[in-house]
Image 1 (tube, helix red, strand yellow):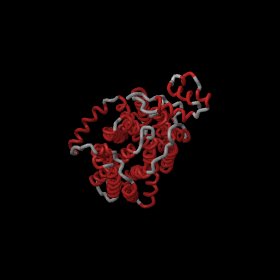
Image 2: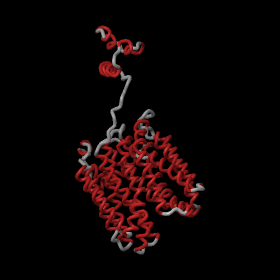
Image 3: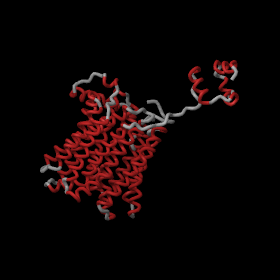
Image 4: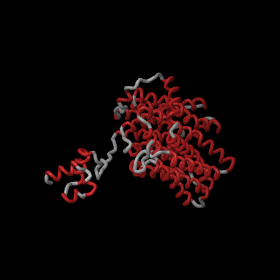
Length: 453
């Protein structure tokens, strides 16, 4: 290009609005835009995102999440029989199921405090180790108090592991890649939760009721050793430099700090969404649906296990594409449709007249759950700064644990009093409410429809 024309274009950017200078002079578009942006402050006409490459450290965390989920899933079909074998009543079994969620709930705040004070890696090592001990000791429990103590240990370990894993992935990701980075964590946990019941049934049938507890203990110990060897510390320097208070003061301060965190309508909306999802998953998916399938269609434990395995495959295959859409177009673009798909499936499930219809609705639920995916975790990370992110994620996990702890009991009571159909329809209505609340009250954080927070 002649020097005088080049200088004129550089000195008068208004010419660019009226002339197709690139076509007239054959200037490479990408190169021209970078020159104009640098020297004239104009936005480039073409903006290409760098290719996304999954950090290799994610795979180690996903393995821990898989084993943590399978540890819970393997115990689902075994615990009722094991508890009955040592003389525990159905009421005691309810305590055994609830106490693990309660332990996770209690441990979430101390775990977040420890992650900021000592780093993410210690939690990734200690969490699976504590879970391994608690689950392994369950195999030798001979009374309700012993079993409760060991289940509390398992809950503490699970909280440490999940806290460390979520913060680790938040550290190594950006808002533009966060959902895709966190997707393997959720996919692996869901895979473990879904495949675990079938694996637990097979192991118990072959080697006795105590064998699944030993299996989970050994697997979790392997995860602890793997994290110790393979994972470097990821805690950001600015978090490390913050002076920490003693734990008691931190707990009180955290509870007080939740007030400004929850003052945001967006945060309240995602908390309600996350809590309702886990409550309905616990109540409708893991409690009502297996009972309905067995009573109405004569489904066996193995057939029910196969359905859970199919759900795991849906999540495994769909998690990364859904996460890409979430990072590209927004968290609500996938979360809200996913919740509505689950609501429709929950409403239609008790109306299924054949096994084929039941199976299709079961898979529809799995698609909706996969669409929701890591959106709550990624969204919470997006709307909180690094100084409040760990406590905000702890609050999110606590909301999920409350739902997980109360869901089976509350929905079970509704089903007992008014019938299984009412239990499913109540779950559907709750999903619609929290989905619409998230759609209209939460601000979008990424993508085309991003709004100010």
